[in-house]
Image (cartoon, rainbow, N blue to C red; front, side, top):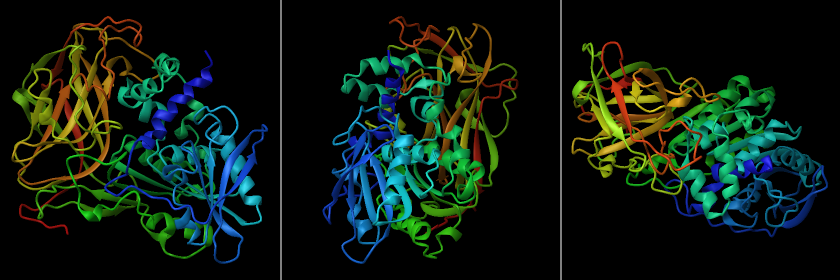
Length: 556
């Protein structure tokens, strides 16, 4: 089987925004293609020609700086074209190109397989045109964002700056096998709808981080990037950690103007509209073009608008939207990520408690049975097709295979901003199984709002590049990366941690057999145990930024 087909899976990971009607809490975008574009067939280094639309301003005289978008979604569609009229009325030429093999472009379509050098060749073609002043900015969301990131790795001489939204830094960890677990909801659902079973199987065959994707792992190539990038992501996006990691990596390890000139904005958004909770209007939208224009005006036009002097990070601190006096629900700024915070441990205690003190018990644990044929259903979180965001976890119901640990009601609001980590001491009677952890904000009325969640496949506890099975009767320490958030948990609320072993359909249920993924239909019921005693202090580590005064506080 041709291994190049493996990269078709990237279409699932970086491009499914095509299926979504809107981004954030904003109306669908209507694109008016005015003025009418001129079609150019741009020659690539291997002789393939890519269909390229050129939009020029109707007023003023060029040459102009250029905004470039490369898309697999049809350059004439609303999503694929972006906002050419917006840019042409601001004094920019706009170039929108169908990726290789898509729509009007020649060649064979292998999503994100050829976008490195196709991006390079297109940038340099743009720079040579008489209507171009030689300064090219690339922009795009999701799939278009990743094509921009890939072009930046090749360092085109005339690529000047980028604005990238909702794109990962690691295909393996952020998109395909988070925690070593196959992200079924993003991958399988789309691939099966496209009858791409051969590609699905190829994806499954590379369950280990075996280096197969290294050439497409952006985090491995940060040193090659030479341009300033504005990364924009959402706290409930499927790639939440991707934008953060890309910002931090380029800020420290980038070359040329990339190093030290990165920006990051994180808002209360998902990969599409979040469900159940509506944040205040100050939360803005991914469709707001203000920051994009400021960014490109500075780097492509030389307008001293102050954007370069803004703090590198702008992030939205979420809060209790039911209490107008609650702190949070406001924008903050920071100089670096993670921001200064006190890492505070909340330990799982016998009886369902969650406390800052290590349990004093010498021997304490809680066991449950996990049946792969009856998995816990996904309710909210970082999803693509199904409902996403801070959904009420009570919808899962009362299940014996979901362990809940919670603090007492908080005496004062608590702000948590930064990376979240769960450490579990576990054992199982099966050679392999999964453990899932959720950070939950429990409201006084019992509502259980999901903040962030993730999991780990036990066989990958020592690294995603090799597998080590569990032995019955042995206790293991597992670390679950819950990625990041920024939220104020309000006074009277409780901090909760939910532990289980499945989250279907987001993650593919572990059959517990220890065999390679999906080699047969065999499953085993696992008895999984969480230890929470003095010698095995299972805990969640929260980056606590602030504990508010014990009184009503208004942040607005």
